[in-house]
Image 1 (cartoon, one colour):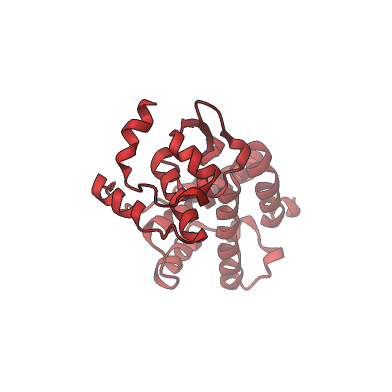
Image 2: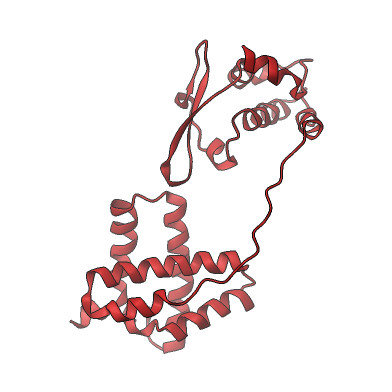
Length: 226
């Protein structure tokens, strides 16, 4: 019974089994949950004056969790959004333990009752066409790096892909045909297909062929029509 009260074995199952096999979360989400525990466990260990490998589930009390959240904001300078992100990971851990250990249901309920902090929602912004044109004209096409940057900016503008999606893109995700398209994998491993303009496909396949080509976004309408 005492082993089931130790939090270490539960955390191992949570990180290596639940997040990976049961929920199939992305690597970034898994890393975020892990980083939360990297901060939480030493904090609780120091407060309880107990080694991390001997921490009990009940050592993480609601009051201790609130102290940890204050520590994140006041001492580590985390924003309210980051504070809520860390709390969401701890809520998930508490739910995982409570669903598999009936003797800890009450503890799980108390931990999950610690509320999120209200944070202002940022307004969505966008670039007007002249701003897009200026952005596309910024790279120096006389250099390999400038050609690469232009190809990437054009791809992002064409597809609306997130930077992370573009960074993890592989060649086989692009269909090089008369109707070029790209397969993007977003948050939650959700996949979507996006058509790409012929000009985008040409430049992405050979970014060094950009000598003296027009770089404004004015080609977009024609490219879509084709």
